[in-house]
Every structure is written in C-alpha cells, then in structure tokens.
Amino acid sequence: MMLTPCSPLPYRGSALASGVPMRVPYILAAAALSATVLRRRRRYSFAGKSVLITGGARGLGLLLARQLAREGAQLFLVSRTAHQLERAERELRDRGASVQAWVCDVRDPDAMSAAVERVVQEAGRIDVLVNNAGIIQATPWEHATVDDYQQSLAVHFWAPLFAMRAAVPHMIRQGGGRILNISSIGGRVAIPHLNPYGAGKAALLALSDGVRDELVKDGIVITTATPGLMRTGSHVNVDVRGRHEPEAGLFGVMTATPVTAMQGERAARQILEACRRGRSQITTGWQAKALARANVLAPELTARLLAATTWVLPGPTSSPEGDMKRRSRDIDVGWLGVLWPQAAARRNNEL
Image 1 (cartoon, rainbow, N blue to C red):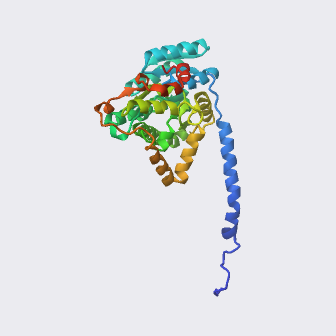
Image 2: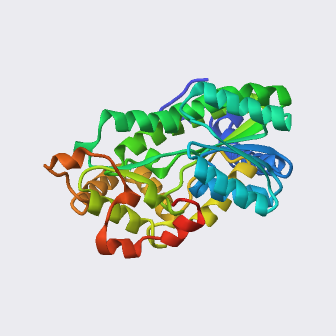
Image 3: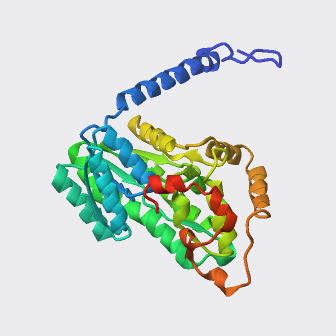
C-alpha cells in the first residue's frame, strides 16, 4: 500500500493505537481496587502481640504504649531514664497492661540485640517493633556542633538500624511482623534551627522506606510516621544552644496551641491505625501535611518562606555561653513559660 501525505496511519483505530489508551482507566481502577483489598486484608490486631517500644517511657512513646495496652498488647519498654521507666511501668500495670520495662541505651548495638532477645525469650516472638526513641535539639546553625549531628544520627538512625537488624531475623522465622519507625516532618522538610534533629530523622526516613520495599516478600510490613509538632510535653526535654531563653521559650510556645501543634493522643491513634492497616507512610497534623505538600508542589516558594522565618527566630549570639548546651526545663524563659503546655508534660511523664 502506498501512502500519500493525506493517507491515514496504518494503526489508527487499531488495538495498539486506541485499545490500550481506552483500557488505561480500567487498569487504574483495578489497581485501586486491589490496593483497597490489600489494605483490608492487612488490617492487623495488636491484641496479644508482643511489642517492643524504644523511648517508651514518656511522650509519644508512652502515648503509643497506652493505646496498645488498651488493645491487649504485651508491652516491652526500653529507655535510658530509669525513674521515668518505673513510673511508666507502674502506670501501665495499674491500667491492667502486661508490661515489662528496663533501662537500655538504644545507641549500643549489643544492648539493642539483647533487648530484642529478651522480648523473644519472654514472649516467644517479637511481633511489633516501634522505633520511637528520639532527642530534640533547637539551635541556630552557627552554634550547632558536630556532636549534635552525631548524637542525632546515633539515636534516630543507628539505633533503629540496630533494632531492625536484631528483630528482622526473628520476624522472618515466625512468618512476619510489623515495624513502626517514628521519623518527623523535619525529616521531609528542613526546618530552621532544627537541622541536627532533621538530619537524623531524614536518615531514618530513607532507611525505613528502603528497607520496607525489600522486606515485603518476608511478610514484614514497615510504616514510617512523619508527625509534625505534637502537644506531648516534649518541649521540656529539648537540648538548646544559642540564645537559650528565647530559643527554648519559642519552641515551647509552638507546641502549646492547636494552631501550631497536634494533640498527642490523637497523633498516637492515627499513627497506630496506619501501622494496623499496613500503610507505608503517614504524616499527622494538618500543619505538617500542608508543609509536605507545599514542599512538593512549590519547593522554591517553600524554601523562601522557611528562610523568612529566620527573621523571627532568635539569632546566634557572640557570647561564648551560646555554644553551651542546656536542657530546656532548666531554662528560665520568663513570661513565655506561662504558655507552655505543662499539663501535657506531667500527663506524659516528661518532667
């Protein structure tokens, strides 16, 4: 057949040219239906499951433990702070929970391996691992030290890696398990004055997402949570450098209001629901969701807006004291302290 400039193409109207595009909506619909069925099939009950929570003595870790206790999980809590662990264990036992708690430095690979082995010895298996332990550092970049970054990576990246390497072989042998990694919106979008913290959380985000894809074949479901600010009371346990008083005071105020921070109990429920449904990721709080979406849709504008916040944040100081690290609860922040959510700190064992 000879073609002229006005001749139709040979495959116009054929299955190749028209059939495939017409089938695309059906393929997408089938994929969406399959995803829905898979989510429902993966819905998970925590009743009777053995759950290891790092940093489970206070804050979000304790809120997760309370929720899991209500659902009948067998809890194992580790933390570096003995007196907070004792209070958390006593409270959870009074609520009728099955709980054991012991001091453990999550930065130590041998200690984390021993913690996992203890769970397996006591419960016969490890069903759920929650990597929640964390530290918060608030400082201008000029005062941030190499040690700040090393400590953030040690707690937020290396500790979850040690825990997963210890727990995953047991989960594979028992036919599956769940891992919940608590990162942060600061790991998705860099926040001024939280750079060491965000660097560690970003490393955890990359680790969690990458390992998730490789362990699906073994029946292990990994959920990565990237919450925004929460009213858990964690503002009293922030490591602060720079202009200590306004730095600590402003951070505390930002965790105090519904406009800037999410209720801790609600965040814990949503995070556990995501783990139960086998979701790959969850970002809690409308503020964090808006920031994450803005960073994807308009990264340049988002960067400029975040840069503009540095005009409001306390700047660096020329005083040598600015390089000193102080815990926020030990800082007199003046009248700003009136706005701090101290009730949440007391309720969630942060003080």
